[in-house]
Amino acid sequence: MMWTMAPSAMAEAGAAVVSALLAHGHEAYFVGGCIRDELLGRPVHDMDITTSALPEEVTAIFPRCVPTGIAHGTVTVLQGGHSFEVTTYRTESGYADHRRPEHVVFVADVREDLRRRDFTINAIACGLGAELVDPFGGEKDLARRTVRCVGTAEERFDEDALRMLRCVRFAAVLDFRIAKNTWRALLRQRDQLAYIAVERLRAELERIVEGPHPWRGLGLIARSGLLPRGKAPFPWTDAALADASAKLAGIGELEGAHRRWALLLHALGASAETAEALLRAWTFPGATVKTVARMLSVREAWDAALAELPPGSAGGSGGELQRRWIAAVLAHGPSAAGDWLTVSAALPDGAAADLASRRAWIAAMPVAAISELAATGSDLTAALGRKPGKWVGEVLERLLLSAALGEIDNDKECLLREAQRMDIE
Ligand code: ATP
Ligand code: MG
Image 1 (spheres, protein in one colour):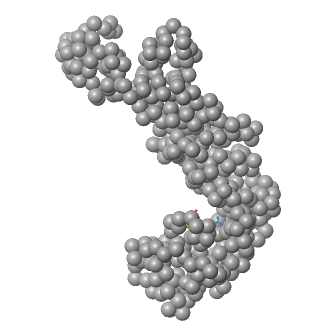
Image 2 (cartoon, rainbow, N blue to C red):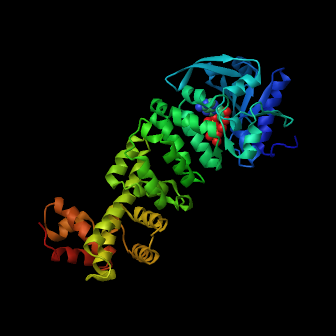
Image 3 (cartoon, protein in one colour):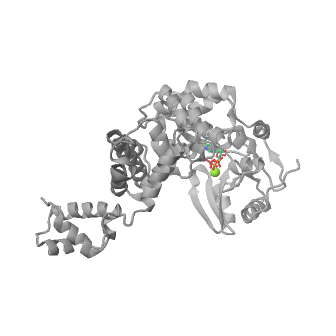
C-alpha cells in the first residue's frame, strides 16, 4: 500500500499519541473520518484514535487528558496543541429506542471495533506505518464512491436510526452514491427516524444544506421520505419537495448558510411567519431564525408592492416602487434586504436588471436607521413643544423614510422643520 498520511502538525501530534500507546504495549490506530478524508484527499479537521488500551490505561499514559466519555471508553488526549479522541476498542449492543446502545463492551480486536461502525468508508483503521485495517472493503467503496453499511443495512439502521440521515449526509457531502441494499434498507427503516432528537436531525440537515452539494442532498432527502417521519414539523409532501427542486438548482452556488435556508424555504413556498416557526421548532439558533425570517419578510414586502404597483405602472420605477422598497429595507434591515437580493439572483427567474436597481437604491441610502438621524426624540419633543408619547417614534420613522430616500437632508434643522410640517395625531 503506497500511501502515507499527509504531513501536518496535527498528524505529527497524533502520531506521537499513537507511538506512546504502542510503546506501552498497546495497539493503536487512526480511525474513521480522518482516514476516509485522507484517502479522498480531503482536508482532515480532526483525528480519532482507536486502541486496545483501557480508558484508565490511556489516562495513566497521558498527563494531559479529559475523561470525555469514560463509560464508553473515550478519553480526549491533549498533545502538541491538538486534541485527540482516544477510544478503547469496543462493541455495542442492546440499542434502546433505536438510538443508543445499552451495553458497551471493551474488546481486544480492532476488527470487532470496526464492525460497530456505520459505513464501510468510516470503518477503516490505519497504523503508524500507513498500513490499513479494512475488513469491510472501505477502500474499495471509496474508489467506487459508494456509501454502504457495515454488515446488514436493515439491522444497522434499526439499531440507530440517525445512521439513515448520516447516510444521506455522507452521500451528499462527498457526492457519493448509496449502495442499492443500503438504500433499500433505508426505505424500509425510515419510520424509525421518529426516535431521533430534533437537534441531531438538524445537525445533519445543516451539513447537507450547507455542504458542497446541497441540491443533490435535498434530492436524496426528498426521495428517501425521511423528514416527514422525524419528530420536527415538516409540512411538505415528497411531491412538494420535488416541485421545489427546480427553484433550488442554484442553491450550491449561494454563499452563506442563512441565504441557503432562505432560498430553500422560499422554494417550498413558506411565508416568513411559517419559516420562523419551523426553524424554531427545528432548534435553529435564534440568530439564524431571525435572519432568515427577515429575508423572507423583505420578499413579502416587495411582492406586495409589486402587486399594487406593477413596474411600468404610474408611479414608475424611481417613484413609488423605490419608496416601498426603501420602506421594506428600513423595516427589516439593509443586510436582510441585500441578502434577499443575492438569494433572488440564484433563482431561475432572477431578473438581473430589476435586482440591480434595487441594490442601487440600497447603496444610495444616506441613512438606514433611526439612530443615524441627526435629530433625536428629545430634539423633537423640545422643538414641537409636545409631551413625549407614541407620536415620537412614528415621526422619527417618517423622517427616516424621507431622509433615506434623499427627499430631505439628514440635518437637524431640516428634520425638525419637516416634523413641524407634519400632521401628528
Ligand atoms: P465527520 O467528523 O466529518 O462528520 P466522521 O466520520 O469523523 O465524519 P463522526 O460523527 O465524527 O464522523 O464519528 C467518528 C466515527 O465514529 C465515524 O467515522 C464512524 O466510524 C463512527 N460513528 C459515528 N457515528 C456513528 C453511528 N451513529 N453509528 C455507528 N458508527 C458511528
Ligand atoms: Mg469526526
